[in-house]
Amino acid sequence: MDSVTRNIPPASLAPSDRFQEKRTRILEAAAAEINARGLKGLTLVGVADAVGLNTTSVTYYFKRKEILAAETLQHAILRYGTIIRAAADAPTVDTRLHKLLALFFDLFTRIRLNQAQPLTNLSDLRALKEPMRSTLIQDCITIVTDLATALRPDDGSTSRALDIARAQVLLEAIRWAVAWLPQYSAADFPRVQARMYDLLAHGFAPKGAIWAPTIYDIDGGDAQAGEISRETFLRAATHLINERGYRGSSVERIAAELNVSKGSFYHHLKGKDDLVLACFDRSYARVSRAQRIALDSDDSAWTRITSSTASLLEVQFNAEFPLLRTTALQALPADLRGGVLRRSNRMAQRFAGMMVDGMAEGTIRHIDPMIASQCLISSLNAAIDFLPWAKARRTREDAIHLYGSVLTFGILGKPPLLQP
Image 1: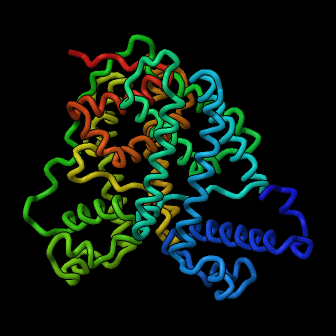
Image 2 (image 1 turned 30 degrees about the horizontal axis):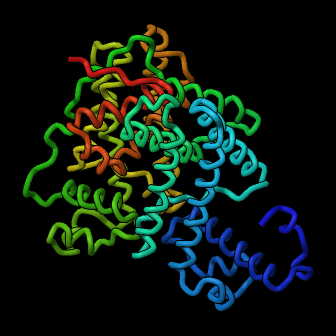
Image 3 (image 1 turned 90 degrees about the vertical axis):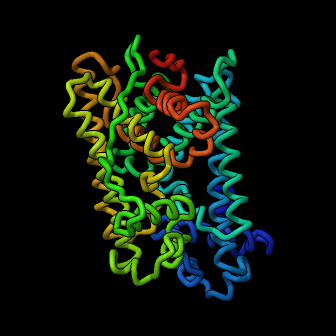
């Protein structure tokens, strides 16, 4: 519904228009609830209150909460797809990338000025029931593959695998921008867009840089095979939450994965929110360990950043105990969410500090370190969704090299050969 129609008083609308207007208002209210409290916080009662209807009236438009949730998320995916298709009309990969960021930042500006509805958070999509879950996951895959086609160099010089990796990293950087853009005034968005384009197009590697990272042991033998411990529960929970979302990962299901009782779970953890916080703490501790090992070395900033990045991608693509996806963040109560985000920002700031060191010593290209570090965090976070892609590569080393090259060497650049 366009802005002109939206301003027509309901009484002057035809019956079909009034139906569509109320349906749109319900979808917008549902999106606001999902953004505020995650899919678990979406209720028909809450949506009805937000639009001034009773629950029975809402069920006239959406018979069940699951249907409302699925349509709300599908609408969000369609918004991404519309922007990607519009950007794909530009004549070259350079202009397509530039147009894509321009369209998204125009939307971000209008959202900030209350001229457009916020993008719905897709975090809990995996928690939907079938067949809606598979349908929407396929819709998400489609927008990634469409973007990969748009990013293919005009001379066709890249592999499809690299094009897909570039699309994933770019889309995740745009989605994660919603989390850190509140630190900037809307008046600064054009500068942020330009800096983000520079990073995504050209990377942070200086001319002639060689990809030769060291893979660190960031877990230090913490896991004990066969022992049911707090760590064991965190592993199982991380896998389930990454795969099914917060809502799809019950205490019963986690206990069943380990073939233990619910009582055993509560012996180690107080409840589900405590579990998610513990999973975040464990993941963030591992990221911090990779960063500390890098900082304690005598290597250049370039080697420190690429080695810590490659080590974390090794964790993600190995998949025995991946990092917790930030999709779980939305499900936490608001009073707990802020602390988790602040810790994520501290890790980004540590990467930013490494980049500043590298710019000073000449081993990192001059980029905006704060924006680059947030994009790096988002690419590491999203890597777990790319596990099937990684397994399809010849070796894990090849997967880490290809995926890691997107931010290091840029979407418009060519990843260098691996050092012999």
